[in-house]
Image 1 (spheres, rainbow, N blue to C red):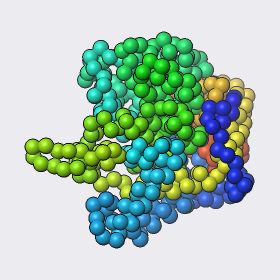
Image 2 (cartoon, rainbow, N blue to C red):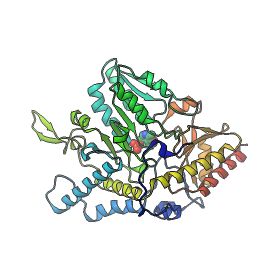
Image 3 (tube, helix red, strand yellow):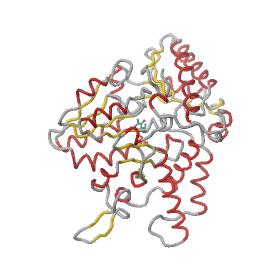
Image 4 (cartoon, helix red, strand yellow):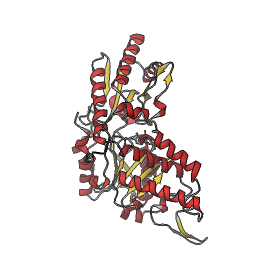
Length: 423
Ligand code: PMP
């Protein structure tokens, strides 16, 4: 496995960051300190959603406790404070992915809404009958279905770039599938089902060489990799707060300002307008144009605090720690007869999907739960990936910065227990 840094620029190490200390980090996440079925919780379901540091919980609660009000429309003190905090959160999200301008960041409900926003605005504007939208086999349903709906409506074609046995996009095939009818590419940065880190910079370069814009689904990337949208050169980048140790119900969509500026609104309502008459409505410029209605104010502030938390850490140390867990778990599970790991890409994030003989993943998940080990079992909203590997479902362990080798040992012991019970 190569290092995470190979696909991303490294954050400069600063002397004022404390050394990586998993015990100290765990103490920041109150949910980790509990027992489940009488066993200490080993939370290995981070790709589905991550636990929250106290700092993010406090920031959200503080908003409701001290300066809660609706944003943007008020002239009173609390509304101004809430607006300042909400807009500061936007700047945090902007800096987090190194967008050039804050107007390029739109708060959305999450990755799913970010992708739907692009499909139903940019997509409706630019995709017509006979055109093509290019995705890959390893997309999450939320980066398939919005494009499928668009293609059905427009009489366009959804084209799918294949993946190999290791679960990597076959880049030469992807390049061949970029045609003069391709109107947009939508690809995941990191696969939630396989852990594969895609060579997105290279894929973006290939699309741009043909004048095709690219949306990146960053849901699984932002908790693990440093993302720089300018360096990647992507046109849209969508991600969710809840996988990033922030609250649920909020996320962000990056879009290049020149694209955003030409796009029609996503939803109509308050805040996204400049003026309304019954004859004609003029829309606000981005980002307000895409934020109709009252946003998740406290959620955005909590997301900003989660980003602050993550940015105070040395991400290279976090990446090294997560990689150690992935390597350690991979070696241990590979050594268990009848375990088959699904997704063995050379460049992987800390997700490990596996099957044990023909034991159903739900049985595996239930037995592990009795041991206090939380994993996900199912198709992981990526049914085409399951089809590609000929399995109905997998068990998926996914690691975050607060996990430990001891928790991996408990996962492996649980797998041995499954084998005893079904052996
Ligand atoms: N894309 C990927 C790769 C994901 O893992 C997920 C969440 N499992 C999503 C998109 C959707 O994210 P959300 O449910 O937060 O909108």
